[in-house]
Structures are given as C-alpha cells and as structure tokens.
Image (cartoon, rainbow, N blue to C red):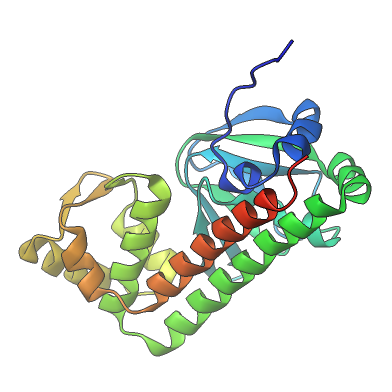
Length: 244
C-alpha cells in the first residue's frame, strides 16, 4: 500500500529524489524555534543540521566588538551547514529573525546516510557551494557598493526568502547586520518610503513596489538569486537522470 508522506517546504530537501528523501525521513525531527533564539553558536560543536521549513534565519560572524551578517536564509537554507563538509565546529552563529520550523537530523545519522548514498553527499555539497557564493557576494557588496544599493538588495532578498512583502526587522537590526550607521539607514529607508517602494511599520517593513526596489539594488541580489535558481535546476536534473 502506498503511504503518502506530508510534503516538505525546504528546497534543499525538495531537490532530492523520492528514494533519497524517503531514506532521510525516519531521521528528520520537526523542530520549532522562536524569534531571536540562537540556533547554532559560533565555534561550538555542530550536533545536528536543521533544514529550514519556515521562518528567517540570520547566519552571522561575530567577534569581541563587532558582528556582521553573512547570509539571510529561509526555506532555501540550512542551519549547521558546517557539518556537511566535515567541520566539527560551526564557523558562524545562526539566530532566528522570526519564529519558524526546521527539520533536524543528527550529524552522525546524516553522515552515515551520505556514506551509503553518494548522491546525497553530492546534492548537499552543491548547497554548501551556493551558500559560499552567497556569503562571498555579500562580502563583495559590502566593500564596493553604496548604502542605498546594499539596503535595497537586502530588502529584495529578504522579501524573496520570507515569501512575502512583510519583513519583520528594525532599523537597528539593519544597521548592525549590514555594518552601517543607524542614522544613514533611517534616512535611506525614509527615501524609499517617500518614493513608494516600501512602507514602514512598527518593528517591520513592507515592500510596496518591488520594481522600484529592484532598480535601487545593485547586481549582487540578482547574482545570489541566480545561484539558488541554478541549484534548484541542478537538483531537478539530477533527479530526472536518476529515477529509481
């Protein structure tokens, strides 16, 4: 008898063949997280890997006197990704920007599955590569592009990741994560609101005119989006040529 399984939202898991996903399902644990909760500490052992099903998660690098966001991920991302390439400790901190859900698997269980099924390893390493592209593009953007371009690009990406126009962040959050002066962020957001691209609300921003915001953004957002799009297409291709 065919047993119907509930679908998964995470795009990395959705890129697996039905057989590979079926092998993983017994090990996946539905895990809820709250806004502002720390999902993974920097330089701490990675006990499990969480495939994000809903919500927004900020991947950050922190030091004694500074903090910067490396990437903002949602259903296209994973928490604890360092373990996918054999690192025992996390290279960054993961903090929930919103409440959400992830499907977690113990590192040891996933390592065993990847040994048994090489296609799993190949698929997940492609995800690691895309995240590296994402992080390096963010770093490049921070060096070469203007504040308004960076801010508009971040809002475009956050809107895509959130799956809607409402982005639950404050001016303080944006200035801290992007390494910008709060007054400059506030002024840029005011200009965005005056031109009709966003609407400010208490503790949140809403994208009102995405086309205007895209015009303000630099090319970095398009580069990051294209990397994730190609990853999805590659997953579909691997699935098509390896039906079981």
